[in-house]
Length: 365
Image (tube, rainbow, N blue to C red; front, side, top):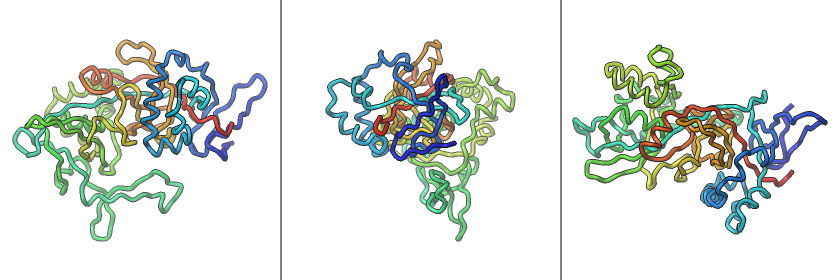
């Protein structure tokens, strides 16, 4: 039976002697998320955290209305804290995120901020467009008509009085879509779409920041899965690096593979480096992308996973500050590694098991 609380975290504990608590829907603000109440003793590396840094990130996150909606007056209290660890432990309680069946293990991948080379003018070298949001793109929020479809949007364009799908990747060039700029590498542009934001060094030496603004409404399809299904790359060998190497070695099939993903991302210029869905600058190794159907944007989480290179444990607090087309599910995340070659290397290799706890206000217990 699903239990809905009347306050943010009004907790109903069904604990019988000798029985572990079962996952329940414990908050009306998380209507699809199954949680198990936990304690800080279950967070193995909690005591080793840099709590002052966490407090600073929390304060910056509180600039967002979504964070304030979730944490309320704690955002105001955070500016007056003298002991960050005591503040978090007294104000927040951890809850293990599970599936409805009680499964607690999921998947975490990685992303980074790439650097591309481009120009404001199309030329023989710079011929691949970084598309801006089209003027004729129409977005319909379905929950305005059907409340049960909250968060689901329909994208398309008008053809007469009829809303039709927007052009897919394969036919995008035939549409009337303007470009922010043009870049010299089609594959780097594709991976920029996957990452969601990046830097473009223009031919006049100026560097601009670009970030996700919208997309064409077609579902994201993994080209890694496409290559697995075609038996071109073994499942356990798929990474950003192996996909790029395969495409470089098979230039005659680049269009075929890229068009297997009909989704196309539209960008806008930003004033700061990698920026997530909250509109905040992402913090390397502290910001993650989540599926906001299950994990609210702005939430503070504790995660357990491992390093994709040396397999050493990663156990730390992270902040849900972004979303992604491929990030679907309760225990699913994408970790932002930052900018540079090392960040690219780790992000491309990361495909590790994940456990998540969400930290929610104790008010209402």
